[in-house]
Amino acid sequence: MIEDTETIEEFLADHSADVEEAIRKAAATEILPRFRRLAEHEVDQKSGPHDLVTDADRLAERRLTEELSRLLPGSVVVGEEAVHANPATYDAIRGDAPVWIIDPVDGTRQFVHGNDGFCTLVALAHRGTVLASWTYAPVRDQFATAVRGQGAFLDGERLFAGPPTPGRDLAVAVSHPDYTTEEQKRALRALWTDGVAPRSCGSAGLEYLAIARGETDAVAFSWEAAWDHAAGLLLVEEAGGAHLTLTGEPFRITGGNALPFTAARDATTARQVGELLRTG
Image (cartoon, rainbow, N blue to C red):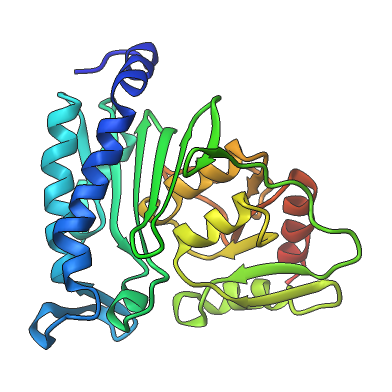
């Protein structure tokens, strides 16, 4: 088992490319062959009609679980589909072992409808801290990576989010109403105001990538599932961005966050969006 952060850093120095290769192979083998070719029996509902799972999700997660566990002996995996089958699996995020956090198809609804706005998300965390992340949009052939303290990159090019353009409405991606409580809806409605241009979010992972690229100014999300946020939040941080919950603290992948929370291109924008959410 990995015993200290230094050892994990050495692993990342030696094997980040192997992780990327494992993700590319899982997408090539299990996801892309099913894109726009899903049969009816390959799609199921989980909690409702907006919460879908496909054979691509299940099989890609299984493949990644096997490969990533092999690459880093002693590590554990928290995958979206495994947690759906056994919610107790999620507790590993709070444990002492290095944990791979996997969303095999982030944006399953888009995937099912033949839209290319989906991605595979993988993060490596230890004792509640995300140390590295990989975001792969296979149809768009975009691969973003981040290692804590070493920057964020898209296809090998360094990402700098930078501040929003002065005088322009803030472009903010917002949780879909189906995934919010009444209290959260009130908080999010505060974003419908002068100086803000809110819209419904798509794939969380791609929204975070858009922030890191300086294409979207912020997000305001109402749910905590680590597989949706861990990879993207590190990407945003390493591109110079920031994230805050309703209490003004950074989002914790271990849970217990005051929601909704925001992630933004810079700390000033994060505070601005956070203040609006608190007035809701």
